[in-house]
Amino acid sequence: MLRSRLASVIALVSLVGLSGCGFTPLYGDAGAGSSLSRIAVATQDDRLGYRVREQLQDALGRDGSREPLWRLQTTLEQSRQSLGRRIDDTATRYELTVRGAWTLTPVGGGEPIAGVETVTTTYAAADQPYAAIAAQQDGEERAAAELARLIRLDILRALSARP
Image (cartoon, rainbow, N blue to C red):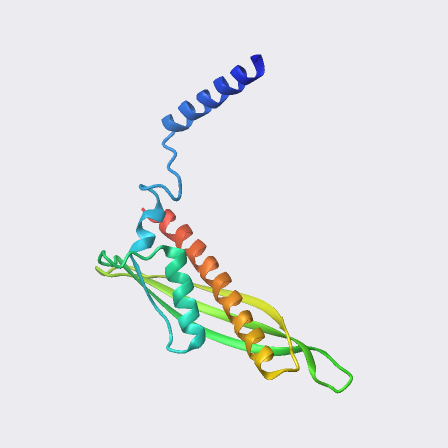
């Protein structure tokens, strides 16, 4: 009983201390996360670009009912390298590397923010054609999701550091 009261008192004192220090959560309404939903995303017009755009819109929580405050332009480069060899000299795995350069520009004009992220993922090489295509597309989807997550973190860092 005494422990639970002591824990309650410590928690209450901690919350009062945080409210007085000017602490603002990163994802709170007044934090940098509140403007993420107002970023319009543009990517190149191919399968990987489409996947990255969808993942970025999901990660940023794009609100299409409000005018964007920012425009995010990405440029993607991908490369695929075979890993491991079977006895017949065919690959057993592939390594997919996606490099995404991004630029975040205010719609009303101002200094843009830019960055570059690189993601590497692997997938198994299958003997059946459909299975090989499905494995490659799964690798691209995982790379797009991770790239979107890293770009979102970069944007949050950059926006929270702005005055």
